[in-house]
Image (cartoon, rainbow, N blue to C red; front, side, top):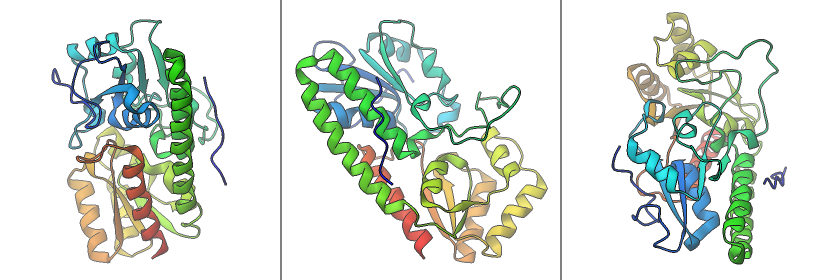
Length: 305
């Protein structure tokens, strides 16, 4: 399966490492871009190259993105940006609220994703963070959506700098080709295998692998809502791991707590592979492809074992 062609039209904010450190202004001659996270910022950087200067509000690899509260400096950055990019789907609502001008070009990733959720009747169930549990908002783990965002970035940047349009399109083509290579690595490698996850952020990557995620629903919901895990759900999770009924444990290292640490320890004792995943780029990693390649390789290796 190939990726779909989906052309579609706190005070101290740390920039992406490869993007410079000046504030969004026209002084540098570059297109000023602000992203909610360094993940989406790195995608736009891959498309814009040296023609863009990207700032990411969420850049700390040790922070929990769900707990982020915007600062006055964030609003100033967004106001001065020529292009903004964010996740959507309830994940980074703080960012959407910072966009106050209709003139600002924006890219929202979640609406560009295929909806893998089952149809739901009635009002969606949301938690205290505004997350809709009928869908999975972590679409940066969906390689198809990432390509769509890259293509949208090429369109928007091309409109801002028509003389550089060809460059943006070439960069996007190169980026998309490497995404397809990642998809070939992971597609189908988990057929017949089972996994559990401390939090369902890598849902789309697991789905692409063909593996079955057997994490108790009540466990996932409690972890996402930062509430106590029901005893029955925790017991079920422990049983799956300790009795080696699963091939791998997917662990979100950015939202660890005593419960998830305990699950990781049990997986280690049982000899089950633990695959670390994150919600933002780890320290020292500046590009989406480098980051995702490491995670794809780790998951593929665990599922092939």
